[in-house]
Image 1 (cartoon, one colour):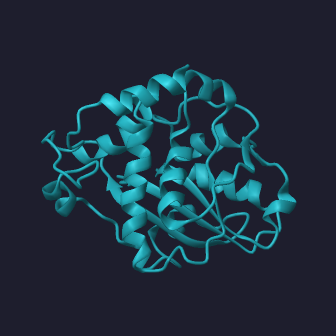
Image 2 (image 1 turned 120 degrees about the vertical axis):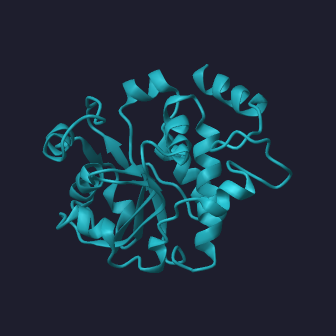
Length: 232
């Protein structure tokens, strides 16, 4: 029922720029042209093999190959609403459409050409039932639709966790420890896998995902998110 309600809402929601509220014209998605041009893009896909995401994560259980995020996330910025509304305001289509925009930008660089499968950061079934969708899965779906990459479900949440919003980096890591697991790991053997989330903050979630993926025989592990949080 929740999924049906989300679909109905997405269909009737006003087509307005998430950032400034202006009416979107034909061909515009998520943002108007002005806000699109002014968006705080990270451009990390130009240097995907070693950048600030790698530095933030440090050494992981399995080495991170490529890492990239679409926009810098500042909590006081109106652009933060792209992530916030897709997560907390029943807007799964917003996450999908934002990911489609990012994927279109990445296509020209060929940075996704060798990725075999996208794995969204999983959500525990109880939380998913309450929310009605997993925003990371919606990001993966939007990305995959444009890039032609299948979305897998091998990465799973073994248990729930409390909110990460106001936790320190140390407490985030403790909160997530042992949370993720992998099912049917043989399906991933020899593949170039990309784990997808809506936002990277301290990196604790991606570090835990890498820990879970260490039990597989993947050829490489890459990471992608819509937002990269600014850390003071």
